[in-house]
Picture 1 (tube, rainbow, N blue to C red):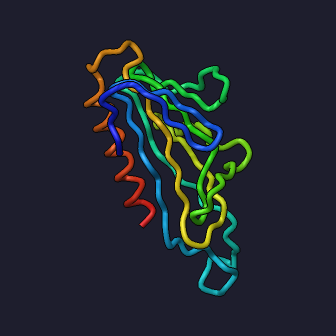
Picture 2: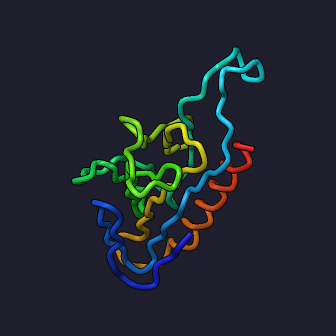
Length: 163
């Protein structure tokens, strides 16, 4: 996780993301994942084609909603900020980024939880994904600590769920 101390631009492939002081950048780096291969050790001899990865992100108050943007992948996080969820992922260390599956990432509501679901393609060694979280659209630092804490708890919960 990176917390930016000053404004600037992040350029990756054909995507440019402008960040401000207080914005957060995380990386989801998954290695050595065992996909079902049709053997009897998998449930009903299933074949793994992708990995769905869920993260619960919630602002201090209010619900997450999709916001209109050029990328179409920006979501508000209540009154605490927003997140730009790129569709680009790095698969097996390749130089070129690939697009996530159509309609992903997506926002799913289950009860009071708001879940951001990412669908990663089958990989041999690793995938790398790095969304940006824009905190405090009003420029204040009042919600940074609460939002980062809530995000970290959600991310740790996801990791335990995956194990």
